[in-house]
Image (cartoon, rainbow, N blue to C red; front, side, top):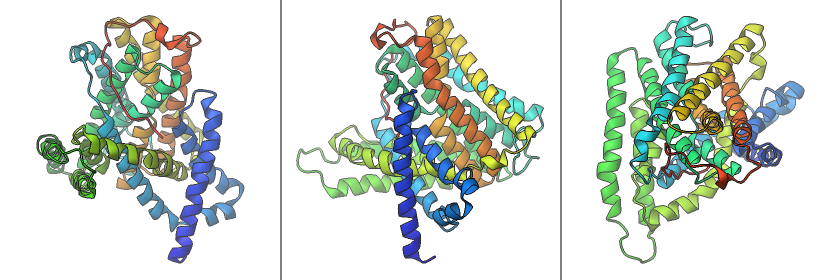
Length: 427
C-alpha cells in the first residue's frame, strides 16, 4: 500500500469507529453503560472476531496489517493526551481527615484482588492464562495481580455521573478508593516489566525512575510552571509548547525507566499549576482527546481481541474463573470494608460494584503487556472479557443496590466518606 492509501484506510476506519461507537453508545446508555464499552465493541465488531468471521475479505481490506502500527501510534497519542488532561483535572480530597476513614476500603479494594490474582497464578502454576513465558511464574503473578486489582478511575467517574450520584459521599469514597487501587496496580506492573529484564537492577531502575519522575514533576516542574503567565494578558503559544515538552519528556522518561509513558503523562498533568493556561489546555484538549483520539485506543483494543481464540472449553473455563475471581475478590472485599466503616448494606454493595469497573486502566495494562511480550492474543482476549464484563456490571448492580428510582440526594451520608474528589470523565 502507498502512504496515501494507508492514510485513507486509517481515516475511514477512524470515522467508522467513532460513528459505530456513538450508535452503540446511545443504546448502551439505556442500560447504564459508559461509552467505553461501546468503543471496545466497535473495535470487536470491525476486527477479526466479527467482521473477519462474517466477511474475511472486507475485514482484510478495512484493517490490513500495515494499518496496525499507525493505529497503535494514534491510540497511544490519544491515551497520553487524555491522561495529561486527567492529571490536570484531578483534585485531591478537600478534607484530609476523610482519608483515614476511607483507607480500609481503598486497601481492601486493591490488596485483596491483587493477592487473589497472584494466588490463582501460583496455585495453577501459570496454566490459568497462556503466558508467553510460562516459567516466569512470579512475574506473571504480579501482572495478573495488577490486572485484577485495578479500578478504571476515569470510567468510574463516568459511571457515577451517569447514575446521577456525582458529589455524594458514596461517589467520593469510590473515587478515592479507586485511585488508591490504581497506584498499587502501576507499581505491580512496573515490577513485572522490570523482571522481564531478568535482573534486580531493572526493578531498582524502574522504581528509581518512577520516584525521580514524580519528584521532578511535583518539586521542580510545578513551581517553574507556576512562575509563567502570571499576567492576565493573552496566553502565549510558548506556554503551551513548554507544557507539551514537559509532557513528552516525562512520558519518555517513565517509558525508558521500564514503566509506561502513560504514567509520565499523568504526572505531567499533576505538575501543572491550577491556572488559566492549564485550564485552557484541559478545555481545548479534553474534547478532541475524548471524542476523536481515545475511541481509537479502545477500538484498537477491540481490534486486537481475538474471540475466535477462546475456542476450547479449558480457555472458556479459565476466562470464567478470572471473571469470577476478579468480581468476587474486589466486590466482597470492598463491600465488607465499606460496611465496617459505616455504610449501610445497600451502599456497601454499591461501592463494591462501582470499584469493580476495570475498563480503561485494565486495557492500558494489558496493551502494555501485549506489546512487551508478557501475554499473547489469547490471554489478551481473555482479559478484555474480564474488563468488559466487570465494567458492564458495575453501573446496573450499583443502581439496583442503591434503588436509584429515588433521587440520588436521598442517599444518606456515611461518616466514613466525606472527601470530595474530582476527576475527568472517560470518553
